[in-house]
Image 1: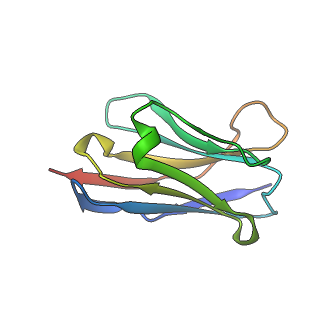
Image 2: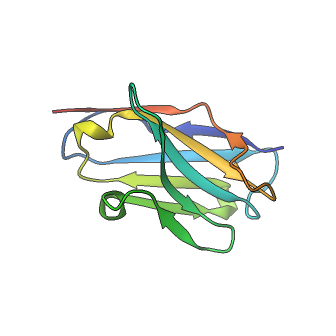
Length: 118
């Protein structure tokens, strides 16, 4: 079983940048798809980005493609989410997720809070 722990969230001013990290423990995750989701206050969970085990990358809403960058370092069992030009509407809890052979995202971290002030 893989355990996921996110870090890197915090309070940042609009226009700033953050890099979120998610470290997997329990077993190597180079055979897993890994992704980032977020949940803003009062809103449903939203898909942000994913990195497949084979090297593919997908992003959620079109607006995310330019400001969000997902990357992974399999040697460190870590997936990153770089967010630039932060906006107040990016305020949310950001969750790391993973899936192996399952079709659904079945492994989740506890989340890290990102708050963007205007």
